[in-house]
Length: 237
Image (cartoon, rainbow, N blue to C red; front, side, top):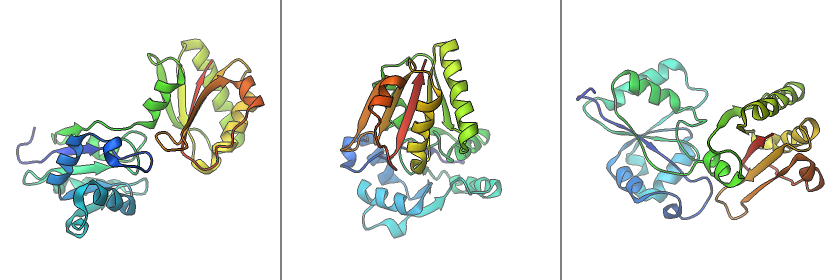
């Protein structure tokens, strides 16, 4: 480890609105209190979270650097200078765990290459919470992120995941851009076998949380309207 460098703290954020202490451990608030520099996915969301986490009235004193899917490699590399002189830095995702289905992973990888310690803090993961509640195989699973946006390619990918699940006895986890949730569900019900199990986990930890596992055939008879709410899908054939 480089003794002249600080530490990167991976700081989870809530998945839904509510009192932060219901979702995050005390240690995270203690760490945030010591930090004045953060790398964040979205500035407005980060300011709102940090204000609620104890920085209210001091937001303008903080150094915030944006890292999202549009950040270029050279910009990410320049973040190394933040750790000089032993300065510690916090990494925030827009929601949930940083660096999991999140562009912050690029900074974590960079820190490892340069001997900067990385410390993950406990927090909510929509993927793991959906898997926990699905009743599906929690010992063998695969997360695929976003599937293809175009209908034909997406349907082929869904059939491939269904075959993989049957062959490996493996839970297949994926997500979708919220405005395409209902299109994704329509494709699943269109191309997957009736006996394949599907978990739909919507707005996890919110007041309108909905998590249910049924067969594709059963979902066809009880199709929900997901809308633009965050959703995790899990297939198990």
